[in-house]
Image (tube, rainbow, N blue to C red; front, top):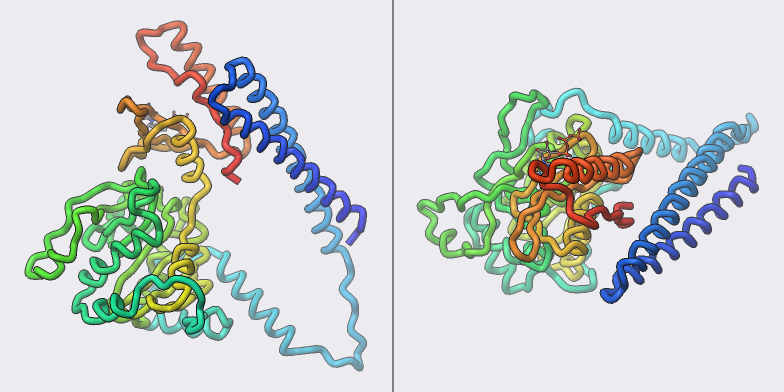
Length: 424
Ligand SMILES: Nc1ncnc2c1ncn2[C@@H]1O[C@H](COP(=O)(O)OP(=O)(O)OP(=O)(O)O)[C@@H](O)[C@H]1O
């Protein structure tokens, strides 16, 4: 590869870092509550200029990266002399890896596999074992465990899957910080169907994973399902436990994690879990990556999937040292949802439960409230293509319309337009 291209990439990366520093410093200044409106406007303009510069630098970096790729592709492979033996197992392994990557990124024709969950689960597990993508529990792990030995003893004695879910709910809520300290919720959907198994628009929702974690704006609350005939389950539930379903199918790409409970994990349970991922990832609007936690009375499996195919499984016992942070770090947080939270925080707004209002051509709209309980529609737009410019245009059109007919247009809030770098 040409050293000059490599050097150029480094220089652009340094320039991006410099600009990012400047932006950070401006953000610090803007956080100062005593800053005057004039200064605020001045620093915002300055920030805009840096953001533009950053975007140009990024484009430049992309161009160099493409050039780098071209140069690599055009570099002839060193030829192997005929009398020298080729490391065949090494080449075979590379070939296997390429096949796994190709399979992972290619989309299957249909979401529902033809095989039973048990044989599908067994096949997938053996494929992952062969490619060394199944990681066994680490007995010598360091750090906090999710459960103490005593708690684990109580869990092992439970008799139904519902009870396993109820028992673990407060522990999972604490690990994933779904206990009021964030806008994240752990939703029990054991009895509410929300997962589609077909790409047919008219198809009904037919599967019900036991739990999922998402931003509170994205789920619809339901009453707890009746615990008829299971007085123990009834006693185990807390008033804070949340029951419900994902409010819209196309919000599935913002799920942080999907959880499935069993009394005892089996091949069939594993097959069922990966099937959820296949259905979630199906179609363009589905997420590329889905993370699932399959758990039972003794352990949990952290299952990573890419385009609906399992790519790795990490097994862990509830009592293993370090199990708590392993579980916590497994959760995905969509950048757009992070921006929603950041926007609410900085604008002093509170997102509503089930507050998703709709999506337009390039953004998502959420219902939020200010400190006085006044409701607003907050639009979040990812900064790709010309989305932000388009949003600015919409803002000025709304303001102009409000100026001309104030009795008809509610309008946009003053100072309502903010860019958040955390999207990247
Ligand atoms: N103030 C609001 N109150 C209630 N719902 C809203 C509000 N603003 C937007 N929505 C909902 O969010 C959806 C998306 O709104 P958005 O402004 O992003 O797009 P749009 O105007 O429908 O289409 P386009 O992206 O082409 O402009 C709307 O279709 C509507 O359902």
